[in-house]
Length: 289
Ligand SMILES: CC(C)(COP(=O)(O)OP(=O)(O)OC[C@H]1O[C@@H](n2cnc3c(N)ncnc32)[C@H](O)[C@@H]1OP(=O)(O)O)[C@@H](O)C(=O)NCCC(=O)NCCS
Figure 1 (cartoon, rainbow, N blue to C red):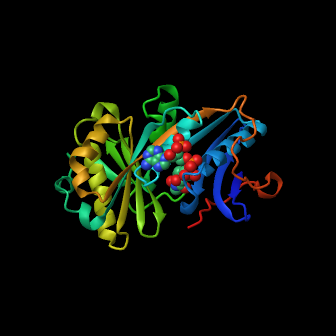
Figure 2: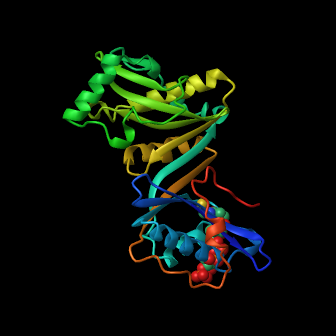
Figure 3: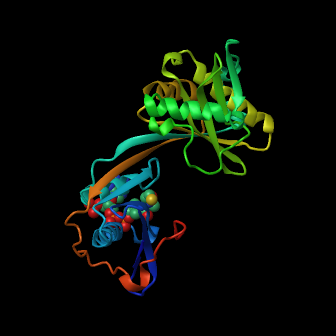
């Protein structure tokens, strides 16, 4: 769904996008944008208010919003959310960026070897029996956090440096990466079985994966994503990775109950006509510059 705002001359000045989840019960706000020349005049608040009202009219009982901090207008956005009675935004992920040239200088990049009882292998070489073993043990006695489960239905898995770790013949860890763009690999999630954690195994796995990217020579950018709930990994990023990163941003998430939220907007900003400007299933975030 897209809600557009226009000025008195009917020129577009802002846009808010949301996607209703397949259940039809909840929606995700994908983007909100107001042209710089029209900011701080209540347009953003009006867009968000109208968007949530429309979602409520369409049967959604809640809306979720995940955004990245560190932008020049983050404070304005958070003020909007506060005014709109969204829940207090909570930290979700750290999004760290660097280049192979810079990260190659990190001292921990030299600690890539593991004791011989371990075997690092390309993730694409995992056997069917090993996949089944992970699925079955996870089903009978969960040992992998849901967000680190290795068989997530995500496209663009990077075969170059998605790695698995075997210990005494069993798969006990992985570093799964994805190609976001021809020049960028995202280090999406890494995991080591609990009894083998706190021994630097994951760092070795990450260093091996980064080395493969460095060796490839034509993929200069990396993005490392770390959940804010994983304290040890956050500590590693802040202490050992930070000097070799070009940026660290945080994603935050908040939520709004839409029950009884189908009221009409109360602001005087002209919001473009619902029939002509609500677009079903937008395929991209649209911004005006
Ligand atoms: C975030 C954005 C949509 C806000 O639009 P807007 O039309 O300026 O919003 P409004 O005028 O309705 O409200 C802005 C509020 O933020 C406040 N604000 C602005 N800058 C602020 C700052 N630096 N610190 C604190 N509050 C600030 C304003 O005072 C106002 O609050 P008030 O009504 O209580 O005075 C707009 O800045 C934008 O398009 N940013 C770029 C895109 C973006 O970052 N989108 C979010 C992620 S998808």
